[in-house]
Structures are given as C-alpha cells and as structure tokens.
Image 1 (cartoon, rainbow, N blue to C red):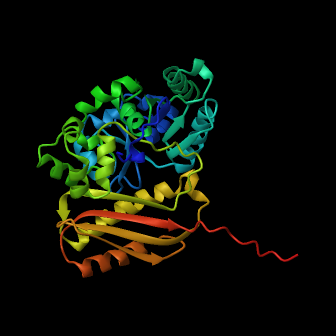
Image 2: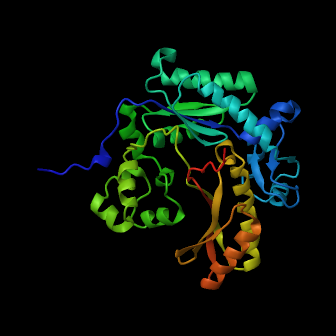
Image 3: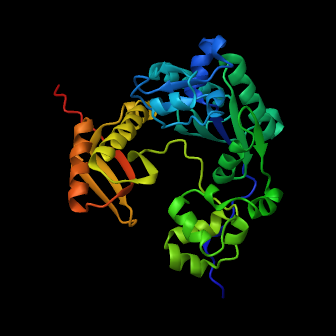
Length: 360
C-alpha cells in the first residue's frame, strides 16, 4: 500500500481574496492633498535628511525610489520628491474603515498589516458567490469611500492569491482559477515562492532551476536532502499547493523585521546605521492595531554572516529600546567578527493570560 502525504492534499473549491492597498501611507496622504497626485511623494520615517522611506507613490518609483531607502538617497534619485512625515494614527484609522468594508463580505479575515489582508469568501453569498465580483466591489467601495486604490488577487489558496494581487498593480485585480494553476505555475519565477530568498535562489539556479516548472522536475527526496523541511514546502508551492487556512483569530507570538543586503556590512558603524533603520520599521509595525495591546517580554536580534551562518541573541525587556538592540549587536559582532549580509530585529510577546489580582 502506498503511503499518502496528507500535506499534499489539495483543498478544492476555496475562494480566497488577497487585498493589498497601493502605496498605502502615501495614498492616504495624497487623498487629503489631491494636488500632489501627479507628483513624486514619499512618506519618510523621520527627517528628510536622515529618515528612511516608509512608502512612496508610483510616481516616485519611476525614479527608482523604494521603501526602506534612506531619504537622502531618494532625494538624489528624485530631486523633486516631496516628503511627508508618518501619521500612524491616521493610517490605523483608515485601516479600520477598510476592514469594515471587508466585514460586509466575510467574517473570515486575516490581517497581515494595516494595508494587507486575506479574505476567505468561500461561503459568502454576495455577488452570487462570485469572488471576482466581490473583489471588484470591495476595491470600488474603498475608492469611493476613502479615495485610495487597492489591488486584489483571487485564487483557491493564500499563496496564489497573494501572487495574483501583484499581477495587475496598481489598482487592478487578477484571478487564478483551479484549472489555470498547472499552466500558470510552469513559468512562475522561483523567487515568487514564499521563503525563497537570494541564497536559496542561487542554490536552485546552480542546478538549472529558474522557474516553478523547473522545480517540479526535482524529486521530493532530493528537495528534502538539499533543503530539509523546507523541501516539502518547495515541493508543494511550486505546484501551486497551499493548504493554509485564512486564520481570523491567529495570535501572534512574535514580530520581527529584517533586511538582506546586496553588499555585506563590513564595519560596526555601518551595522549600527542599518540596525537603526530596521528598528524604525519594527516600531512602525508595533503601532499596528493587532500589536498595540500586546505585552512584550523580550527582544532579539538575528544576524546572518557572509558565510551564511546565522546567530541570534535575546534579552528580557518590556519596552524594546534601540539601546537593547545595539547591545545585542555588540554580542553578535564579538561572537563572530565577519561581514554581515542580513540583520533582523524583533520582539517576543507575552501571551500568557493575565491574572486578576483585585481583592474584594
């Protein structure tokens, strides 16, 4: 009798919509200042001279400006760029309005960030159960109510719906149906697979794998041998198989942000500059609704060196300050004084139920 790998069982007839707002922070600001609509605009984390780009509109992207870029670099690429400071309370408020629109169609919503969410509309009765029409209506209501645009992907699973939402950006949507999956996956670049970064891409390229179609030719045994448990994920995703559910009540155990650098960081000073940038991004993420009420019990740093060895260091804290991460960075550098290709910072939440100590 042949053994059956349950993880490869495909969940059929699901209707998943991935909504991704277009340059969200910048779009919110431009909605309030319509005269900026045709101009390059960036929302920067702090001052224009020393800040980091949080989001920029598509006009700015034409010049090569992108998120996480130092503002001073963006200014060199686009001298006419207009910087607007971050107004996180405003973005949270708009995000709540967007989620009210989502809830008109389904209660099964998994927020990924303020500007991104998965919706399971498998059993929704609106629009005759047609997810394409639902996505179009959702996008239309967002624009009519808030004057900002959204892109959407419709597919039988989360992996494909996210890819589809990128297909016709900005202000568009794309649908991948069950009978499209096999052909669609053949030419899809392997970098589109969740978890495939620069290192894994190079490793796969070295054996002639550039597309998911190429990857499908590699046996599961070989993938497991070369990539461990991730080999099973590669085997599934390159075939468009993703059995994850949309989790509306998912509890976050931790939160982290990280950057991989095209040029290795070779000095402590450069590491400190980059650490400050990703710390700022972490602070912005912690301001999102789903994290604001969470208690923090520790913070950590992740470092990948140029030899691909990874280390992490952690310390107890309630309020994660930049000083905590600088001290952890010192430990990482002392442990192994080598060029660094990836830096990450994060926090671990205390999800234990809080005792009520009130005495009556």
